[in-house]
Image (cartoon, rainbow, N blue to C red; front, side, top):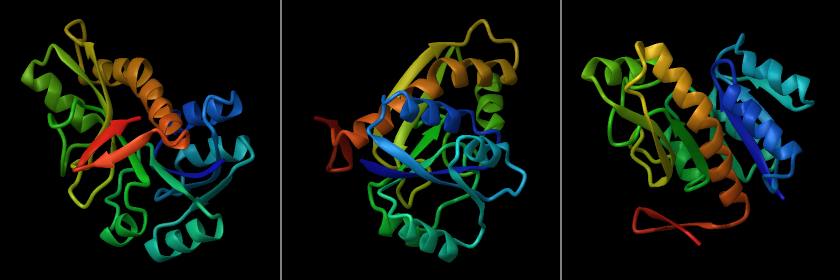
Length: 197
């Protein structure tokens, strides 16, 4: 079974979808640790309610120490609003998964996170958007793509509506699907591309 750490900065609804998927045996893994860079992130409370170790840590050396202590195999960034250092990325190469609320390469990279992604999408007048799960590399939102899914947003009248529609209909589904594939050893990175085997 794969030992998973989830990093969160906010409410942790994607974390909750992973907690539920593990409980329902949809994922061949176990969430051992939840870390947040924000002391009051509700995601920490979600973890505690599920009996998972939940810790507020900002120092990356301490984060790495805790990951080693818990024998973590996979890190999932689920709404983690901090840039992960190259030190952590190189230590866990192709073992860090991120969910991004757009169809990469659209609306991604530095400055594009959370509601800012949907504001840019809405301002542009996009009719379709979605979410992407990818491995984390040194390039922000530039790692190999695992899964993408799109949805019609032409009926949305605000960035907040787009955010909610994508979160509920896509993010919660493809994140647990990608983590499930990883835990079943079905993801292979070849020449910067992900093959599902």
